[in-house]
Length: 303
Length: 285
Image 1 (cartoon, each protein chain N blue to C red):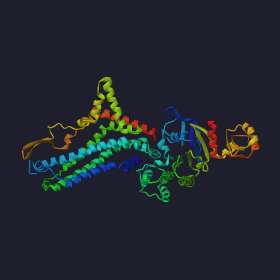
Image 2 (tube, each protein chain N blue to C red; image 1 turned 90 degrees about the vertical axis):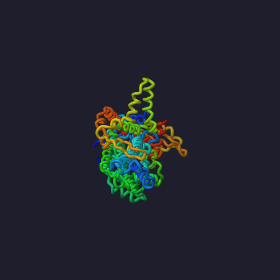
Image 3 (tube, each protein chain N blue to C red; image 1 turned 60 degrees about the horizontal axis):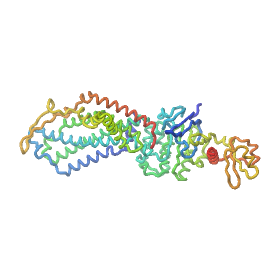
Image 4 (spheres, chains in turn cyan, purple; image 1 turned 120 degrees about the horizontal axis):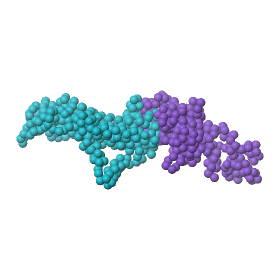
């Protein structure tokens, strides 16, 4: 446990991008909010429109949603890169010989890096995204005085966002465990061109399967894993039913209707996610790949 | 008491290449052993096996442990410098100390700090900002602050200038060595270490070609410089190597009849570097 603490700190020393990248993005967003031209508020989210507060709540969803999605995308790319690099960088600069001269087991090393890649980096992004949404809401509220009264300040939306993030981080970690395991295996194994090695074997299997059997099971599974598969299982965005509401929005060109969930909680589908076979098959494959990465790590030294 | 390191039939294979070929040796506690050989002789393979950094064939025990399976436990009692250039460039000196202090139960922080205080190195320096000599000082300070039974150094002074090399070995012998410790050094620069060793092992093409204590060298090996007439008789005593120098021929013997040898001239104990050249060239011919 004590080792894990130091190993995590070590990752932060080495990979300053973990917090630098989201901090810079947050800074740019805040700058844009302070000096940029604020577009919305004119017609769509007029506080004197339908139902005091509701459109403002929607605006909060929109704000928090767009910032969240943006941070999620950047986080996924960075996290993927981190996992692909984390067992390779110290072999490349030979510092693995220093790390291995210390009484730290290879499984501690590999599992800590997995923890950083799948949980800690997302948590850092979450914290910074959270702060960004808070600052942006504050700035918009101050700049468009009209909002300040009805407010972007919805504690319930706030709480929902936290729950949404925690749920997303946990489910993403489980869903992408096989991907993380694969990236770490390549990281522990390849002597160079880690990106190429991470892509080529799956591509070869895909082409090989098509060519030999004319089928594309592997490709479909892969697309499901990397593409829509996660969102389909972890979230339920089918409209209507309890928890959804339809609101009439008054606009200049006439009225409009908008359907949205009364709470972000209604979007989460933990039963669908944890009840899916694909979730657990993937987790098992991921665990096997991680074990293989630990084995490789113990036998491979510098490049 | 069992030896500190015991290797029986130790082999290391890279594909078809046999880097270590059924090697046997043992190292007792309290010694300073030099594992000496040309580049590519198998020195590094031997050390990597000892330290649990690579798999191997054969029987190997270090501090009573099986290195590959028990590296973590082994590393709390042994330490090593694989090469001075392996401290990562992004790491700050003070954080390196924090980290080792955090994970190593036998690290004495104040000792590392005292060793570094004598240098120009500051805590907020990153490794990449330090010269190779300074990096060596940091690495040595980190390692010497560990109360280890076994200290392994692999080509520790590679790429260092003469001054840095000298102070490296001075620090090692004066500040570190005592009867509770054992040091194993590999190098291909024999001259540098021959005065501090208690034992030497020569390794060539994956095999140990000589393994003895320096005290025994005088009993086991002899060199005689012979000129002219006696040469054929001296050759009849089966030297393992001969070398011509300044009109004389120097002949090297292993376990000779010392009394008879004195008839040919003054019998000398060869230096480690002479012995190294003689042994390796002798093996080759």
